Image 1 (cartoon, one colour):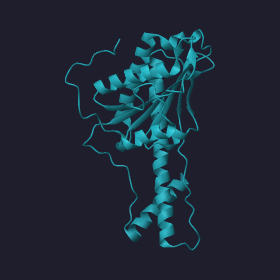
Image 2 (tube, one colour):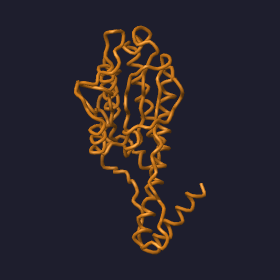
Image 3 (cartoon, rainbow, N blue to C red):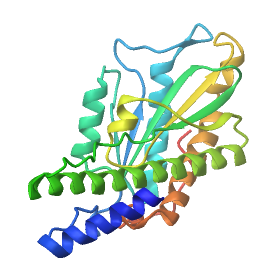
Image 4 (cartoon, rainbow, N blue to C red):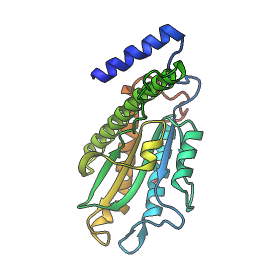
Length: 260
């Protein structure tokens, strides 16, 4: 806390001295919120095979498509990292999300767990170096304070990702989905390099040949997609200002249930 207070004073001093102000994320009220959904695997990356029949890459895509439909009916813009069975590299997934100026990033995975459950992850955003050279120039000080400002923004991003993960986790529990170990941090290339609150929802089972049949159950998919969509909506009602815009375009028709 003391370091953060010191950073704020340094930023204020630089602003008064040079007129420089840190860059901040400002919500663009003219566009709808954009949510990026990332169904894991695809193409040559099949993922686990469930019950010797169902392939994880197909199931994550099914969950992603159903979630996309629900969120679009709530008025959000939604993009899938893949629309079909194609390989998409982590760099390509990240590039797509950034290019779309996404407000949220949700990755859907299916893997082996200790027991039938869902695990939620977020990342602690890595910090950039803020040390200032002794006797450094105004340019060095300017760069250092810009890095301090970026670290404060990264701290906010970490907090918002954790908040999103906790809200979605609670919604899943409310909808009778077993949660493995609450919400955990994870070192992950995509989680650490997005520019918006980002979570991974990893559905799994202890026995991919029998006990994991729950994953392919239609009622289970309906339940989890409703829970995730509800969690996203609740999060956006409580998010910090740059992440709190409401959907602008609303469906003109009554919202139906998820596709069967």
